[in-house]
Image 1 (spheres, rainbow, N blue to C red):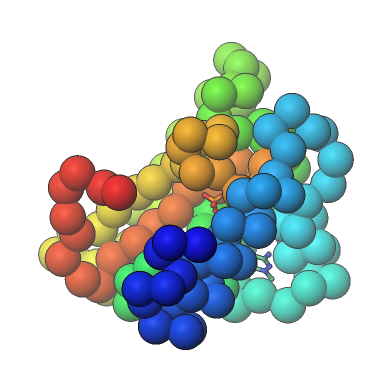
Image 2 (cartoon, helix red, strand yellow):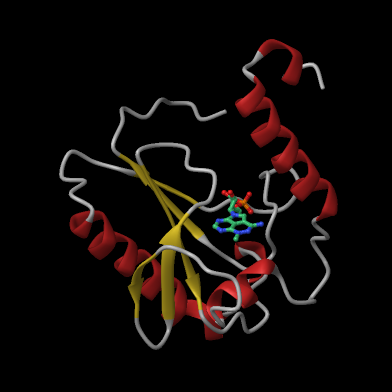
Length: 144
Ligand code: TR5
């Protein structure tokens, strides 16, 4: 890609992985995602918080010193925020509240960024709703 030719090889690999994940992602598809295997521990992840409803683990391609994904253990049709229904209000609140707890646990007293990517234009690549918690560096606005 145009991007890849102007950045370091490591970043180029990461960029193309994201591009590949985006290309493979099918927004309307209700089939399992990689996160099901992370929940079942079939695929290892670096878990930082877990209860009966929520799993929080470190992103494999961190966009900051701290980059954690918070996901519901049961997707229940919540492939993305745009699919939210009233029945999801409790889990949506729990994801955000848990993000606050994890931010404190990670020492992000100076602030942090919460992101939920939705759909192709939102750059969503995994269709199991997830909250990104990013911190440990100065964030910029507007985001890319
Ligand atoms: O692009 P969106 O917003 O959908 O976020 C998906 C996130 O999942 C990205 O930030 C990826 O880096 C992250 N991701 C993808 C995989 C993965 C992961 N984080 C932890 N562990 C992972 N495994 C084992 N496999 C992935 N494909």
